[in-house]
Length: 106
Image 1: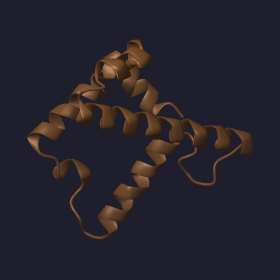
Image 2: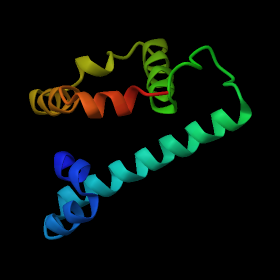
Image 3: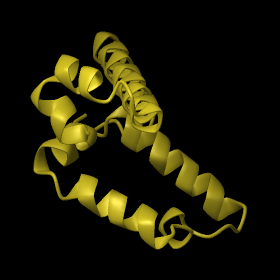
Image 4: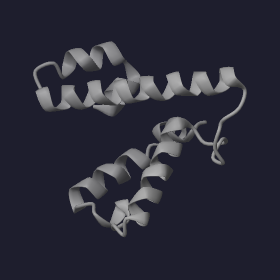
């Protein structure tokens, strides 16, 4: 679904319109990416970021913040709580250089 979205977003949404779980994921993913780029634009307009991770994009900054909060509460690290299926999904996403680059781009 992500590959189809990358190649032709409009066609991907049409292709998966009868698959509510996939469509819900794609809509959530697109919303998340839209928010990421909106925040990125706001940071660039201000000319600087207000935290030490200013070289990172908003998604990475939020992930680091949540991980720090988890550790402060004595909870397991995010990757220690993943089931095998979640780990495989994450590995598939992270093995796509275009998606990885897009997610990590400040």
